[in-house]
Length: 313
Image 1 (cartoon, helix red, strand yellow):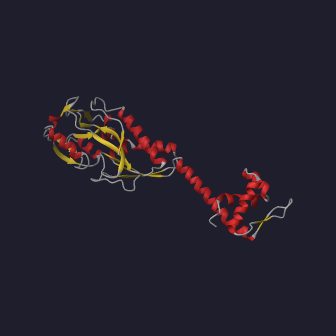
Image 2 (cartoon, rainbow, N blue to C red):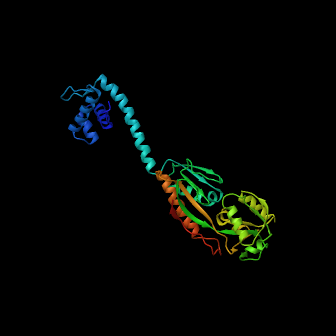
Image 3 (cartoon, one colour):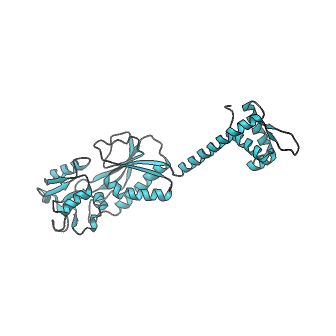
């Protein structure tokens, strides 16, 4: 039975449906001799005739063995058809993709990625998990956004450098850039000391600025609410500011910092050596395109700029 092939079963189904080898050949686009050869090969594989051939104009008749073979053969042909359809849809970009993300990317980059993926592949299944652990691992994720390189067996693309800016209440500082020393002992609200935050605060300290942290929260909207309430200013990266639409809030002002702090680096990671699905490959391409668009429209007056993507491993 290991010699039975789908083309043999397809030929048998065509003969059974059409009642003759000639009509089956016309339906399949084969020569009649080819259909005869395939039926002969099937009969050798199953150990007996699957059709009685009365000859002349009389239709062929399926044998009892042929009935057994055809019943199971049609099931196999149907499953093979479903498999071929699933493979075609997968190669066209359908399927499931699991993406790890964090707050700023979720607000600014991912919505555009999702819109484009769904426009191109309406049947795709996109799943997200949002967290920023101290030691991120890609695990079973297809893609992982993170603000820095992760220590794992991964490949990556650097999407952009995300500059830090000062968000303050209206009138808290004169219009224009704010020098870092002006933040010394000034009240400030800030993210918890995870991910890139310790590096940013160390850079402030090395520049001679030691602001008084009066409140910490991992939620951007909460920090901005505290800035509006007069609790202090906040040093936040541009993606967080953009995602919260601070530019349109008349109660808040965005200031460039002088000298600029080292920018936060946004990376997209995927497992090294793993064959990516077409959907994941397209998601990487779209993320790079979106990052380039963001880099082409940096915050007004920001001299640090946003650098574009580059691949690495």
